[in-house]
Amino acid sequence: MSGGPELVYAVPREVLMGGSTWRGVRTAKVGEILARLDRGAFYSRPEAEADTTVKQLIPYLVLRDADRIFLMQRTRAGGDARLHDHYSIGVGGHMNPGDDSLLLCLQREWGEELVADFVPEFEFLGLLNDDEVEVGRHHLGVVYLADAAGRPVAVRETDKLTGAFEPIEVVRTVYDRMETWSQLVLDALGDRTYSAPPESHA
Image 1 (cartoon, rainbow, N blue to C red):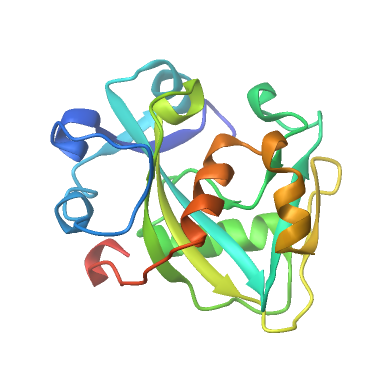
Image 2 (cartoon, one colour; image 1 turned 30 degrees about the vertical axis):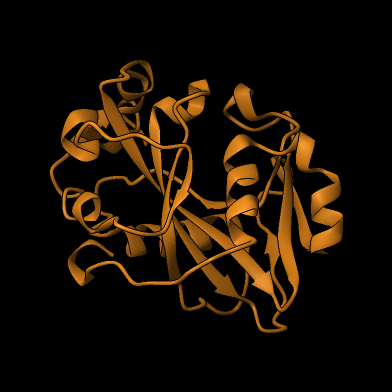
């Protein structure tokens, strides 16, 4: 954003988490946390990235095409040096002013990050948390799934990312070079359950 640092939405950790913590994707008993998502505010991104007392919300989409997963690799041209050269299976980003909901934010990120002539239906999977790594301590992921259903998808910013649908067997060969969040989501996909978050927090 011009005229100052990017503003990102975050919720105080104690308010959001209620003293609970976990590592991985939680798919059950998430209603209380979802009900607290609207109790945050916008912070400058540098401030939020340095403050572990708040959690930035990140809608995080895993895109499938039948039994294939859209696998991306970040280049060194990306803005976050902590993620350079890592593989990812997640599309998403921070909520900014004007993003009235997580789904609207995810729709914006879809258009900014991918080239596709459609917007899929986003299906809620669960909440993603990892306080064991630096990036994870500052963020809470809200994980969604979608299916391209045979329709073509490509990466928009090819200087920052490469990406293509790959069989799950290929995705697993780069597991050790994945971002931690992607590893945790891939683990969760082995035994997934689906539910929908409350409409007001979707």
